Image (tube, rainbow over all chains, first blue to last red; front, side):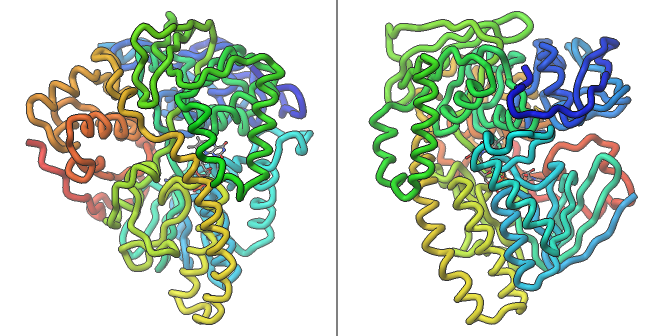
Length: 94
Length: 479
Ligand SMILES: Cc1cc2nc3c(=O)[nH]c(=O)nc-3n(C[C@H](O)[C@H](O)[C@H](O)COP(=O)(O)OP(=O)(O)OC[C@H]3O[C@@H](n4cnc5c(N)ncnc54)[C@H](O)[C@@H]3O)c2cc1C
Ligand code: FES
């Protein structure tokens, strides 16, 4: 959920996640904009269970997604218009 | 594309420690490059907001300290290389860093490491569910994105971040179902004498407590998370009373809260891998968060030309980090012959007393987040310890039963710590499990610090880097 008080959000952008359009603002990370959209599950762990942002600072790698075809940390990747994200959910299930 | 830069000093990390180290060294006449993976300097506690903030006053002293540091760096001659992640350090010193759109190779006769910490979270069933996040990590979302981690949350764990995070969530318009603190009121009060040197921080803490009271948020001392549950993400959190050692009270009254996020953290661990990758001598000091470099009083490590400052050298808090950074920055200027001994002594003098006072406060806070053996013992066998490789406690205990006595053996036998986070999140727990078997941390050893220092998407590692130049530290025997 976005904090409203005392914050001036950047211009609105739309990016896609697994084909679904998600709204964000310049200055936000992909992970944060997804949280605001109620989207917590970003990938599957080795046992198949869902995983989402955990450390939020680019260390744990729980939030990695494919961004325009490159592996990136959703917690550090800034949103931009037209960004194409694919999550790694249910893909690496043993 | 690889940019080559040379300088007198490279500073790795632009938090309170690295920022003030760079300013002090630059002020003494050194040519300084400051590298940080963040979009702007500030580090964790003084994080720069990614979104524009229209009401700066409401953000409090940490935000203002960050703005002041960023302004001072801009006004200085320090060359700031933001958005660059250092992934390989070589003796002499060369720092290889990668950015989203290129790479940089930095060369300098002196290297100052100020990489800060990562968070320690003691596992419990359900801690891998989406929506369960680190307590310190939550501050990154709150500060960087001005985003609430959830609409209704439980804040759990230990230490001063509990009230800080709970208060920020309330101020941001969220609901805090409960604060769940391993510590007790008497433990907090024991820290008071050390805190008296920082009345500003005491007042801020009391203000946060008052806000929790006004919102009627239950504050459960001597409680811990028993489990988190949910289908696609956390939906409920069950907590129960613990004793002073963190062991769940038999027959204790468990309580369940429905939430969409759980923020949980049990302290911070110094990011020692950069210094260890260069071979600097380290000691295991639980009161400082784990493995810390052996330093003289001014940040000089066991390797000539290598300096370490801030929470990455032992958790003492932001105020102490900034002062230790300035001390180390001046020491570099002195050691490189840029300032004479008299000026060095004169400039160090006022810092020493202040750093001692700040560190006392930091140590009182650290006592609150000490590892509690009862909480470690209570981790059930089926709980995941290593998130990356889904290794359970039962698998780790089986390896101990079979005779594993060193971290290297445990990794090879169970795959714990072999995943992309390189053992940063399971390491402290595995060390605590080893301690319960009577294996000393020194014998067990830290995880071998291998490049990349921080995880890297593989594309960024290529370029004109020669793999033969890699100097890998020796591995521990695996059998
Ligand atoms: C996620 C998190 C949130 C925290 N929030 C708070 C808070 O709200 N309040 C509080 O009092 N304390 C907080 N802390 C505690 C914090 O450690 C100290 O208070 C303080 O920030 C320490 O200052 P420092 O300069 O030593 O390290 P940091 O402030 O952690 O600065 C280290 C810097 O080094 C950079 N870095 C590390 N490794 C690399 C690399 N390989 N390449 C490039 N850059 C690198 C990091 O991006 C970071 O900017 C937090 C800690 C963490 C881990
Ligand atoms: S949440 Fe840990 S790397 Fe992004």
